[in-house]
Image 1 (cartoon, rainbow, N blue to C red):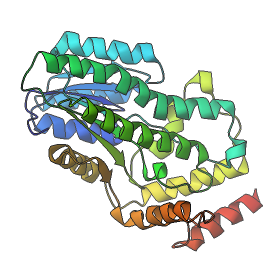
Image 2 (image 1 turned 60 degrees about the horizontal axis):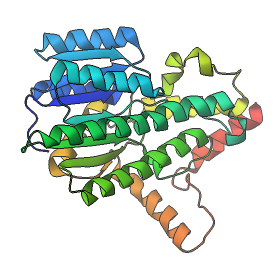
Image 3 (image 1 turned 120 degrees about the vertical axis):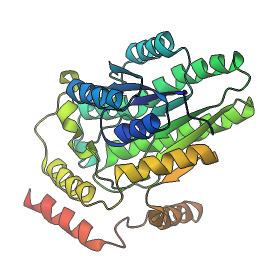
Image 4 (image 1 turned 180 degrees about the vertical axis):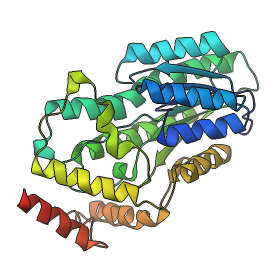
Length: 300
């Protein structure tokens, strides 16, 4: 996808973090923007700021766990702008702790947003984009699914999140292959950021009542503390990641990494799989992190 001016971009999780920065770039490029988020005050603020920049904006509260709400987002987009060209299935949340201590509500919330949100986005918007392409011989589109380096690695006390993001990587690779199979004028990418300062480590602030959290265990408190520290100390910004992502869209690049240096860990994991070696230590290069986790767990 090369031309962005006057094209329509749909961004879930669009009121903060990566989504907000995608919107900023889209506005700068002259795109029409559709922002979806569950946090109404942040959504209203984003819409006002982007409209002040001259962008045309449709902002909708949307819980991507629910197919009906994603469908309503698609319907409103078509009613307002008449087409969809760029989709960021970006909404995401995090939850940690020892994997056997995660409650059913934890699983339902994280998989609901991180995985089912992408499933609904792909299922609904890809078909809509294919229909748009039928009426426009010059149509070009692109879908970006936000996964994580946790979709390629499996650090301890991140089990629910790891599972959700591994599934998004698989879904995205399959989407890429299926679009290629039918020779669709639509590209696909998967974004795999590492630790970047965004609001994801504080995503509990938007956790709905139907999947309310239980009293956190020692491992969940430890995982939260480690996540807060890792995310807040990240040197690559959400702005940097958004710029990388738009470049990848232009270049038809599928895998997008914020921290290519972390791929050494991915390579070691792949080699262990091929050689039937037991999983290696994800903290081999930073053993102090495992030591801190163990200390916190023992302290309760």
